[in-house]
Length: 147
Ligand code: DQA
Image (cartoon, helix red, strand yellow):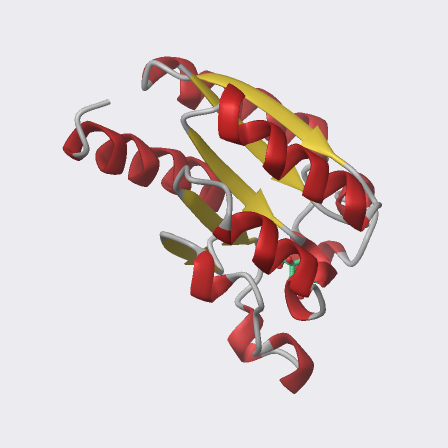
C-alpha cells in the first residue's frame, strides 16, 4: 500500500539550510531512509517536495484515491495555510504532521499550525527520524482500522 510523504517549501535545501537547526542530511538522504523504513512496514513510499502551496493541495487531493495515508512536513505553510487545512480535512486518509525541529522551542510565529487540528498525529523535534516515527505511527493506525 502506498503512503505519500509530502514536503513543503525550502526543504529541498536541507543540508545547506541552517544545518544547526535542521541537520546536515539532504532531502535525498532522508528519502532513502524513509523508503527503507516504509518497505519494512509494507509501504510503498511516494516521496515528494514542492515549494508551491497549490501543488501540495493537489497532492493531498490525489492521496484520496492513491494513498492509504499521508506524512506531511508542510514547512512554512504550516503556519499560514488555510488551503492545506481544508485539503487535509477533505482527504479522508490519516495524515501525520512532521517537523524536523521543535517548532515550540522557536519563534512565536512557529507555535501555531493550521495543519495540527486536521492531523491524526504530530511528530516534532526528532530531526529526520521524525519521518520514520510518523510511518511507524501510520502503520499502527492503519492496522487498527483494519487496512
Ligand atoms: C519545519 C518548521 C517550520 O517552521 C519551518 O518553516 C520549516 C521547517 C521543520 O521541519 O522543522 O521550513 O517544518
